[in-house]
Length: 282
Image (tube, rainbow, N blue to C red):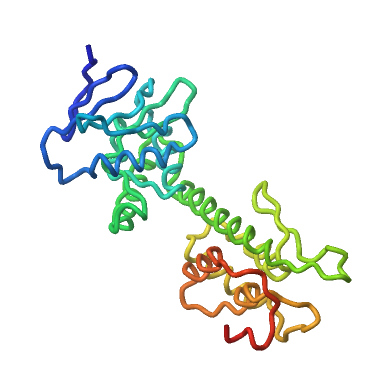
């Protein structure tokens, strides 16, 4: 027989054959996303962990893997919310410990995706994120919480800024031209966390000068990085060095929106091409 659980307002929940089975209490819920969306986000969040097996049953019920454990304490709850935010997942009702499970090894798992959102899943993501940050602030003010809100925010910002730099450097590595007189030694090495990249020289300088600001808000960090790139770029093109078009676009930094600018460069599909006066208009 299925095991009954403490019931929420939106779903009737049972445990059956090591699966959590949910069915809606009402035909329409104004507070939760559809089961299709919940399945998609659950499997995205747990991709590659063995827990990415959420599905909708033949009887239109939501089925997710059962995770054994207890409700987390406030510190474990805060840590999990921070990890979710680092990956752009926000849970509107994140203050409710019943939406999380802590296993015996200290790992905490979000288990209710009814009010979970990502930038791709909801056009109201920024509003939801703002609300989650307010909830996080309230949790960190509890006397038993050892973390501060500023500490949490710094961790989230550092992660996001490093991820941006890694993506930018990974693309930039394909734009380094090895010239005959450098014996294959073109570019400069830069380290982002435990990852190492060889990138165009001025980008390496800009990244190194921006590392002290790594915990900045991502928008501010990207603006600072762009300013640093503009300062480090040479005033004249050295025709003998064959600079790539992508690299010159990066150094020129012609944008009013650094976030869009860097994302466009990261997603750029152009083949490596030497920089020339004519290519400025391309």
